[in-house]
Each structure stands twice: as structure tokens, then as C-alpha cells.
Length: 381
Length: 150
Image (cartoon, rainbow over all chains, first blue to last red; front, side):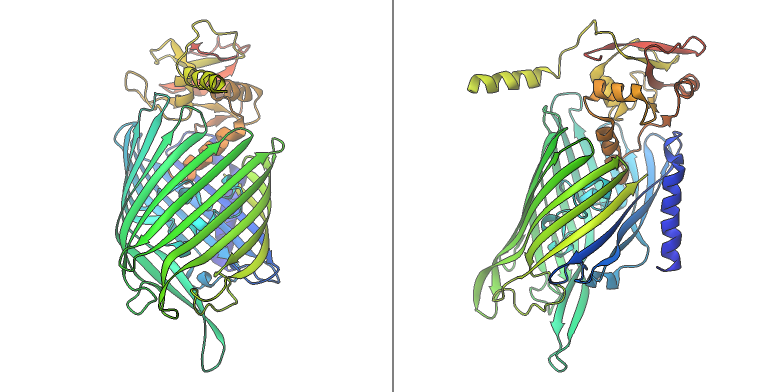
């Protein structure tokens, strides 16, 4: 571990032990979270999890919040993330600016954020690394994976409107605009040396414009969501001029169901992505369910799918459907206290995300298969 | 079967609107700073205040809710009574609010005395404490609670 990482980790642990944040209603607050994991695969390497196992698997963040008054807030969050031997680690700095924005509340209904803000998309996007809140180590990859044109943040602004706060139904509406980036990687074989090499590039979406609606039902814990965005994508391995697809206009529509009750929860999201120029579509969906066996112990299950429909195949000279990603998972989560949880999970994965097996052509190849397990400890303050 | 569904729906929706004018004896009392002009508060409004969904009193002054620490028995009762949830569920709500950058939870006090001092010294403050606790030596006032709190 490098010096900077040690200092950062120390600061998070210090914050957890002091808990000064909650003892006074001050203008300045510091919060943070940490998830540390040990992960091991029994087949291929996937999401940085090698066959021999790794403990270089963690996510932590420190948040500094300044409430100038009841209406204006400035927030900065720094993060440090390790994903074992994942190719995306090549472009990940030791400490990164997670997000930083100014929030202004006009009143109890209207507010605006400007800066590098969290993308208000779906159930999990804004809390994708907050381990104590998640039933698994990571949010469902089928929906929130970076390979699916997603990002945690957007450089731009968002406007939030809350409607009918006092009635049984309430509506939350987010409008956002700006740009975001994501990391793409591929394992290719050098034809001269026959060696595998990892290629990592950054793709981006410009002029993005999106909305997210949430409707809270009178049945407390049940809410329905609907969202969508569009934007111009370029760069990376897929959307660069010489890339597999080229620059594109991307549009996405999504539906979310979140039923979270005292004893159990059921969450499901479905997204359809359209690549207009190539007339290709991707379908992403997952379902999660969890049940509290006791106050502290819960068992959770998850199934996620990412399929591409009508992908242009240069080899077959026609359009084909590609089963890009499929994952089944179960987990046991033990809440020692609400801010300290342990998780043990097992995944059965079938996808083109194997990091030790080159993908030559997804339209004619079968996806790789592997199983992997993660044991993690998460805390927050 | 359909009658049963109608009954369940009726019960679910009607929960939101009823106000019991003479509540059962509560295991906690609601205290506010002397500057607060209201004398009664509904369970629904109280829950929104403690989730910071309502942030100002009717006269426009900011509301400063204050909590007891997580282990306090009266907090467990208050949370169950006002939110019909466990303290852990409310903690999870605040974790989400914190890490989405939306808001921070009300401050927590380690004792009822500390809570009373806070309420006494902060205009617009509101807190709760055990029904049996004497508040005579503090300049605070008690709000009567409308709703099904026990």
C-alpha cells in the first residue's frame, strides 16, 4: 500500500472512531465509508478477481460537507478504490475526486446541484460504493456496470423537484444535463508474439440530457421509478472513429421497482439502450430479493442479464443477438450494527467479461463461465 | 378475494389521513424550544421533521430536530411509534441521505439532560425524551402529540 493510501485509510478509520460528526449540528461535517474484501474465482479472472484470490479489493471515501446556511451546501467526496487485478485499475488514481458540487435549496420542493454530481439514475447509482447499504459487495453489474455506458457522476447540473410531500403519494423528479465518461477495456492477442495484452480506453458521452422520476406509493416502502437519457457517445474502444461501432447517438429508458419492507425487499430494474445509427439495442435487467432471517442476518439473491439485440456482425455479415452478461448470486449479510456489516457472497457468471480470455468476436463466440466468491467487511460513519 | 383486496387497500390508504385527537398514553414526550409557537403536532408531521422533509416551522424559522443516541430505549420506542420502523432502518435512510450528498441526520445527544440543554439553547429545536423525565429545570415546552403514538 502506498503512503497516500495509508494516510487516507487512517483518516477514514480516525473518523469512524471519533464519531464527532453526529454529536453536534455543525456547519461542517465529515463522513466516510470503507469496504474491504477478499475475493477469489474458481475459473476465469473476472472484475479483478483472480483464481489465486486477492485482498487488494476495497472501496473507501471521505466526504467533507459545509452547510453555509439552510439553503446552500458545498460537498466534496474523495475516494480510493481497488479492484484486484482488473484492467480498469490501470487508469484509476490512488485517490480520486469522487464528486464535488454546490447544492442550493430554493425551498422544500426545489433544489439544484452544480458541479461533478452523482448521476441520479435508478435505485443504486448514487450509492454504488456504500457497502453498508448494499446486499452484495457491488451494485448489480447488469445495470450499473461501467461497460454498460454508465458512470457514477455527471459533470453538469441537476434540478430536483419534490411534489405532494404531504399527501399519501409523493413524486420526485430529477432533471440532469452534462457529460460523463467510463472506462472500456479489452484483452487482445498480439498476432506476432501471441501474447495477450490489456487495452484500456476512456469513452465519453456529451450533451447528455436525462430525467428520473420516482413515485412513492402510500404503501410505505414501495416506490416506482422511470427514467431516461440521451447523449452523443464517442471515444474508447467501441465509439472511437476506428472503434467497433464508431461515434453514436445513445438513448436509454429505464423502469425501476423498489419494495423495501421491514422483513424483506424486492428490487428490479430494466433498461433498454438504443444505439440509433447502428440500430442496435441492449437490454439490461436485474432482480434482487432479500429476507431478514433475524434482525441482523439476511439472505439475498440476485439475477442480472445484459443482452445486445441486433448487433452488427462483420463475420456473419448480418445482425445477431449477443448474450453479453448473465449472473446469478446469493449472499448472507450480517449487520453487527447498522454501520458495520459483514457479507459473504457467491456468484455464477457467464459473460464476455473474463479478463484472462481474449474475446475475438462476441457475435460468433460463446461467453466464458466462472464462479467467484467475495467476503467483505463494510463500515461507515 | 376481491373484497379482501378492497379492504386491504382501504385500510392502507386510510392510514395516512386519520388523526386521533386523544392519543393513548405515550412512552415519550416531545419538547421544543420556548420560541416555537405550536402547541400540538401530528405524528405524520413529526416523522417528516425527523426525516428533514419539513425544515421550517409555520412562521418560517428553521426546525432543529435532535435525537438521542442509537442505544437509548426511548429512541427505539420513538422510532417504532413515529416511523413504525427499527432504528437501523432509519439509520440506513440517513446513510443514503449522507452519501448522496442530500442531507445529514439530526445531531445525537448522549443523555436526556444534554438533549434538553440543546433544545433550551437553540431556537426552533425539537426533541423527545422519556415520558417520566422531569423537565422543570429547563426552559422548554411540551408539545401534545396527535396520532397513534404509544
